Amino acid sequence: MNPAIDLESLRSEHESEEQWEVRRSFMLEHRDNFDEQELVTLAQLFTNIEFLGCRYPQETMKRIAQLAGKVSAKYKDSRKNKLKRTFVQASDAAEQKAKRSFK
Image (tube, one colour):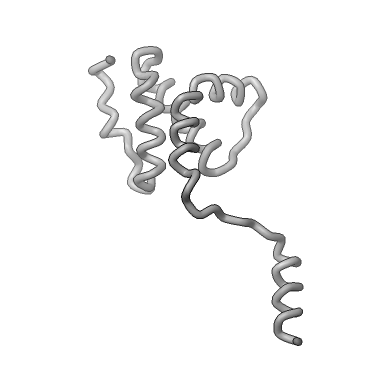
């Protein structure tokens, strides 16, 4: 373990508990393999992909997928029994609302 990296000091004030736990797990898993700056960057890329749906160049996506295998699997497994968001296009929602209000 790299004791020089104080992970707790790296938490963003805008990060939810869930996001922080996932990013922290990623950093814990890889803290011996990277210097602090690279570790923080890779962990942020990972959480951007998982939580925000961000996409990066293919080579970056592959690297993050390889590094995040265990953490990602654990996070996805923990989400299995939770509610999931469903996104619909605004036009579809408006159409459905209009159909209900005119019946």
